[in-house]
Amino acid sequence: MEAVGVTPAPVAAPEKKKLLDLKDPFPAAANSGAKASSASKWATKKKLVGGDAGYVLEDVPHLTDYMPQLPTYPNPLQDNPAYSVVKQYFVNPDDTVTQKIVVHKTSARGTHFRRAGPRQRVYFQSDEVNAAIVTCGGLCPGLNTVIRELVCGLYDMYGVSSVVGIEGGYKGFYSKNTVALTPKSVNDIHKRGGTVLGTSRGGHDTAKIVDCLQDRGINQVYIIGGDGTQKGASVIYEEVRRRGLKCSVVGVPKTIDNDIAVIDKSFGFDTAVEEAQRAINAAHVEAESAENGIGVVKLMGRNSGFIAMYATLASRDVDCCLIPESPFYLEGKGGLLEFVERRLKDNGHMVIVVAEGAGQDLIARSMNFVDTQDASGNKLLLDVGLWLSQKIKVRLVVQTFCLIVNVGTETSSTIQLAML
Image (cartoon, rainbow, N blue to C red; front, side, top):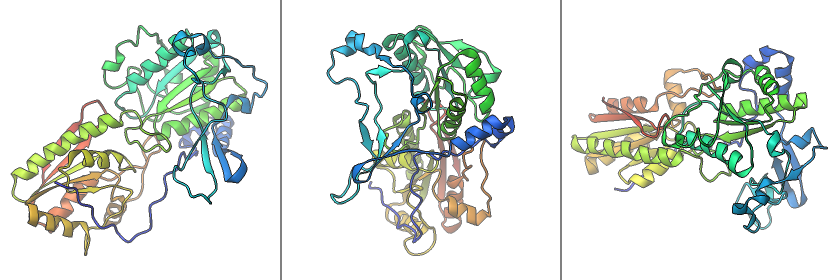
């Protein structure tokens, strides 16, 4: 069964995806004093470097921005037999990655980003490193694997012997004790779901967090989290910079939504797509078994439709896929309801996959809804699955099965099935 698209609504194109909106999502942090307020002001600036022929490097903040005389040391990987034999293993400091792959011969070179990877010179000696790892925000498949690889990489590749975990998200910096992490203690955690360090939303107090880093002598902190978490990490870095501390703040993006620019695939995305297919298969069985049955599967993704689109392409049982990047409308010629009627007439049943961020403007207008935010500063989304099911039922005499699928909390999905 082939998936059929719906004619897009004649509206303005959606806003292009931003790489990172560096605004302080934690207004409460400003109440912690002038330090947090000052850091928040720093976080609105971007580090841009110009070059020939319209070349622009959107660089990442670095210790040498405020400590230019910082000494460097040979990378320990040079003495590691597993890596030293590999030619060109280290990344050249001038290597960058272009934002746009397809360009015209007369166009400017455009925006570039610093290429990740090991350098020949590093800014910390192995025995001086005190590293900390924290997980924040919602759960995601692969979190424990990331923790494990960070610990094993620091120990086995770089000779670091002091790594601790911060329990309970950002608030764990100032409300809980740390837990020691070693290759032995994390050996099997990748087989477990969730995160062994625990997590929470909110709880960001910039001054208290940096006080903790300073008091405990932590000079490398790895922050694993999504949009709101990385905005918070940026604010932490700016406070570290304001105090002149030699401390690296490393953001590890966590999202099953796969909505990060210039990254091929975020961890957890493959699992999300795989679990989404199970829900689509269940919806197809239900819809096919009923007269004029319609299965509506709502998938995670916030303001991106990658999970919905990839699961649809992999399933082949989906008749219509609705994603935030492609606006749609219900009534009139070329609308969704017209397509549903035609599909039911031709096939007797259908399956609709809808990303949770799709149709938010339509729902908000019909309900006179005012935008609200969660503890991490993310916009709360209205339930497009139930709303769409009700709209179809009002228009058509059908049996609608609505599957609300949450593939972010564990490696297995949570499915709620309701006949509307």
